[in-house]
Image 1 (cartoon, rainbow, N blue to C red):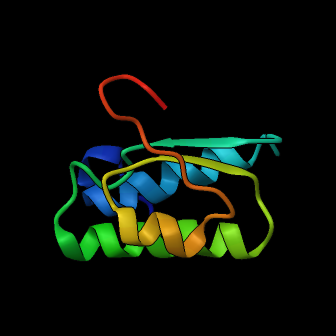
Image 2: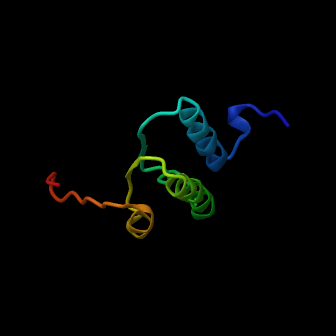
Length: 85
């Protein structure tokens, strides 16, 4: 059923944002801390969506503190320390 954005949970809002971005068929999708404002359950749902995109072959750049997740879905992992990559 139809809902206004303020009626959606944080995870639902995040998934809608991802769907809107993908509708443009970008070459690269940037996620900047996609789970930082979500509780663990909703964060897990969003990570599942991102994992599915990685499996489908989308090129993703993910800025995250979820190191284990990053290692699972990435071909390359880069770290920054003191502003140095």
